[in-house]
Image 1 (cartoon, rainbow, N blue to C red):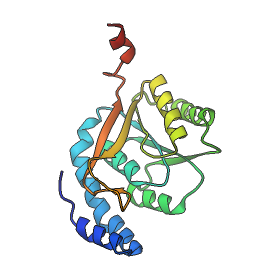
Image 2: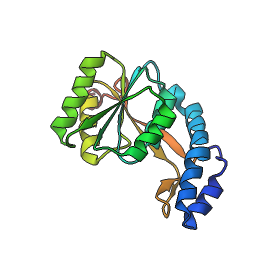
Image 3: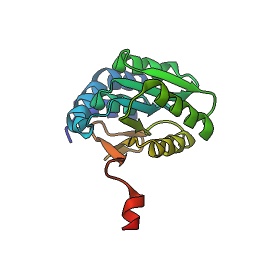
Length: 192
């Protein structure tokens, strides 16, 4: 892993209770370097997938990382409610290359219906579903949809977690391909 500059400064600010300064440093200095490192390490994980569906909760960073590594021609972000601070971060780092779908609730039917509608409206055959964010019920629904429609499922994970800050250590973010419809067919492997 690449050591990300400003990491120690950010950790010190966070530990000393200077949360606003830590947040400013994170989004102005750390996140751009994290994005570049992640993109360099994981852009080859995407072949010719052209649409990204991301599930959004309260952390925009994983969505940004996957989008920057993949560079989709269409990016749909699914969420419930509205969070202006999170959306401002998305707008800053993703520019205008995405749309947000707001669900009325996080039920299976609501999520599945919204994703199917996007599939029909956008006519993309190679889709990646990023399940990193969102409530567990939304992630479960999105995963079932992705399996049903042969979409690649990804999750942004990390190798080091700073428990007291409740964040991954900058630069330790990794892309986990949870399911690849081209290689992961358990029903075929189980029958062999």
